[in-house]
Each structure stands twice: as structure tokens, then as C-alpha cells.
Length: 334
Picture 1: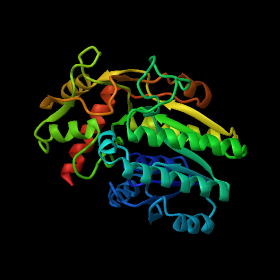
Picture 2 (picture 1 turned 180 degrees about the vertical axis):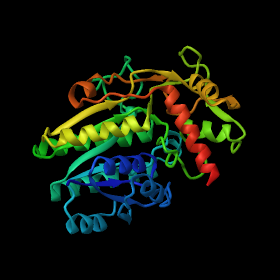
Picture 3 (picture 1 turned 120 degrees about the vertical axis):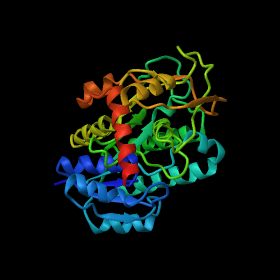
Picture 4 (picture 1 turned 90 degrees about the vertical axis):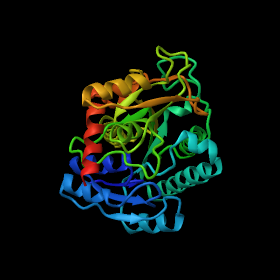
């Protein structure tokens, strides 16, 4: 049985990853410093899976602690989610983003090389910067328009350098588009501390009356309704992409790069209206100024992942908004 270490494992993506890894028969470990999450999520994972996940409260950038962990047991692969992830926050606090995201990635690379582990790196479509063409293929020129995106881009470049120097190192770079939704049980979902930075939790909290109104950042983009267009992907589809990447790494392919998206663009207001229609609730919103670092439209060409990983998204917008609202209702009932 392979053992997989998930960094940032108590977060939104990490908790779904742990759940699916257990379902797929993997042995799992979770590392998280609880900067933007709660260890209580592991209770929900245990309820879903029937299995307790070993948890190490630590920073993934802490080389001494990680070296002790890696030396104490065989870790076949690392799925590295740990990192700050909000565009607006990165513009306001760039040094925090560079320090946290880059240091944790460097530590994981060092551990993987030292102990022979494979790596799945959580990258982002932000590495494409302002799109020159759509949909975005993996061959699109790389750049970044905000500090968050630059951390992902610089880490990708570092991984490519490491791979060139160590041809036997196996690593998957997965460029996410916009994960939304929640586990079908309603027991785990996106639950950020403080004010949400991502669209869907803000929509859910506004619909639930926790927030007065949703802020829509700009309505003067060159898009059908003036609001930003994104490629929203259900979190469980995204996680299935990681399982496909893990299986591909078993064939020792070296460094591989894939988009994880649906290939469909949806505007912010389209998402809001669909949320209202499917769930029968109202989401008050107000148009505010554009957010620094945002682009008008961004959606994937996922054909490479379909061709090389045998993966493609299965769930649509209705599933995304329904599961998100179910999660919000469950979280309020607890």
C-alpha cells in the first residue's frame, strides 16, 4: 500500500483529498499548521471514511520537522497543497506570500529528493497571466499579474530546474482553474477563517444571511455580462485529477504538467443566478471596483489531461451550486 503525505490537509482541497485517498485504498498522513483551517475537519473525514487520519501539526516549510517525519516512515508521494491562495491578499501582503509559499515548496522538494518520494504540486491557472488566447493550453506563455500567481510560477520554474538536474525525480504540476462545490455528504467543504476570498463561500454565506451582500469585483470587463469569466470545477472532479496524476507518476514519467478545468467559462453573475435558481434562495450583490490582479476571462483546454491521464470533469454547474449550498446548510446546523 502506498503512503501519501498531504500538506495543507485540513484545508478545503486537502480534506477532500484525504477522503478520496482513503476511499482509493491509500495510506495517508496529514500535515497542516492550521493557519486557515481547523483540525475538526479530520473528524468529518473520519465520519465519511471510517478511518482516522494521522495528523502532524507543523509547518510544511519546517525542514527539521519534515526531515524527522520523512525519516520515520516511507512516504511514496507528497501532494502539496500547503500555501496561501488569495489574489487580493497577495497584492496587499506580497512578502508573506513569497515566504510561505516558496519556503514550503522548497522544503518539500528537498524531502522528496532526499527520500525518493514523488510529488504532486498544487499550481494554478494564474501562471498564464493575461490570456493571449482561450481556451488556455499548457503551451500558453507563462507570466503572472499578481504575487500569488508569481509564487506558483516561480515554484513551477524551480521544479523544472530540479527535474532537469534529477531526471529520476517524478513530479506532477497540476494547474487548477476555480475549485468550487463540496463533498456530497455535506460534511466537508470550503470553510475559510474570517472573510472569504473565493467566490463560492462568499455566495453561500450571503445566501445564508451571514454576509449582507456579495461584492462583485467589476462589471466592465470585455465579457458577455461585464463580470469576470472563470472555469469553475467541482472539487471532487479536481481531486479525481490528483488520483489520476498519482497513478501516472507510478509509471515514472519525470516532470508532467496538466490543466485541471472543465473547458467551460462561466461569469460571476451567471454563477450567482444559477445558485439562486437551483437552491431557491436570494443572493444580494453589489458591483464594486475591479480587484487588483484579476483578469477578464480564464478557462482551460483540458484535453491534455484527458489524453494523458484519462481524466475529465464529470460534474456541471448545477452540481457545484447544489453541493456548495448543502455544505453551507450542514455547517450552520452544527
